Length: 216
Image: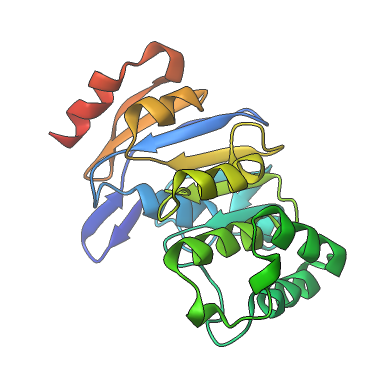
C-alpha cells in the first residue's frame, strides 16, 4: 500500500513478473500507474505490504538495486542547462559506464549532431529521446517506463524502439493509454482504477475493449 495523506494511491496491488517479461499497466489519470513505478524504482516507500524487486525487499534493499533499474518517467531527470553529452557523461560517471556508451547512444537516437547543445534548446521529442538514453545508459535489468513514447513522432519512436521496446534485453514494467499497442508488446496486463487492481491477466487473454472499459 502507498498513501498520499489519508488517500490510498495504491492498495491491494499484487503481481509476480518473470525475468525478461513485460507488464503493461493501464488506467485513467490518477489511478496509481506512476505511483507504482516510483515505488518499484525506490523513489517512494510503501506504507504497508511487501515489495520485492530483483530479489530485494523494499525499502530495506533499495540500495542494492538502484544501479540495476532504469526509470523513464514524466520528469526526464535531465539538467536543462547542461548539454546532452554533459548530462549523459554525468550519469555515466555515477554508474561507472565508459563514455563510448554515451556516444553510441547519442548516435543511436539521432542526437549526435546536437549533443553539445543545452537541453533547454531541445524540442519535447528530443528531450524524450535523451531521457531514454539516460534510462538505458547503464543497461539496467529492469526498465520502468511511464508512457515511454510520449512526445515522439513515428520516426523518433522507431529510433528508440531497440532500446526500450519488446526486444530490449530487460524486464519491463510500462504504462500505456494505447490498449492495442500495449497489449501487443506485453506478457501480462494490469488494470488500475483509483489505486486498486481491477484486472490482472495474461496480455494475450485480454482484448482492447476490456482495457477501454477502464477509462469509461
